[in-house]
Image 1 (cartoon, one colour):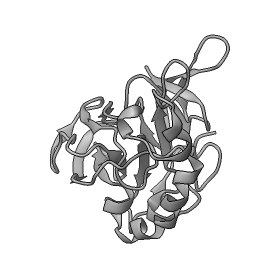
Image 2 (image 1 turned 45 degrees about the horizontal axis):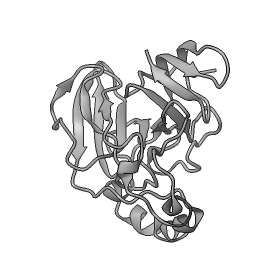
Image 3 (image 1 turned 45 degrees about the vertical axis):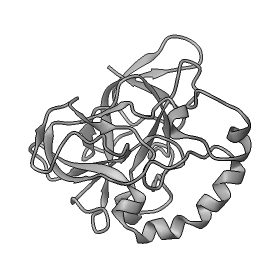
Image 4 (image 1 turned 180 degrees about the vertical axis):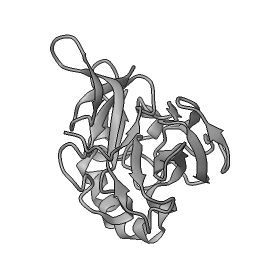
Length: 225
């Protein structure tokens, strides 16, 4: 059941994406209330076989991989709601991706240093929107360096391109991180619950079903209507 005070949004992309770290599974969704991530949700683009990576070889199992190997890298990220751009940050590099457990070990050891870098180290390249007629703010993070198409003060409509999916900040493979919060600065704001409107859930068997209002579950594959 979704909360009546949840910030109503639409999915910020086209195509099929797998849900990770969903607040439908647990709260706080990312294991902490820090940085307003209480109700944050991650989306990973997948192909028709539910795979996020287009290539698998020895690097997949023991090393890092170029982000270009992944379905989502470079895919447009769209405004999930009409509003005003409050903050924009660009210039952070897109890291090598890490599916290998071996490659994840050194990454985990540098987690604290990324946290010390604040928004740039954690969210990477990102956009913060303030929805029209509301006090909430919506963050879309881990965007591709050089892809941002908006600036502070711009008014955007629902579905307008903001940038492209990348692998910047605290990210192990290209994905879109979305969260709502009660202020523009995640280091001081509190996380707010979200709800998504009009999307389709693809099941492994049978026809997809439409959800008019809800929070996608962990590992569900969803598509915007």
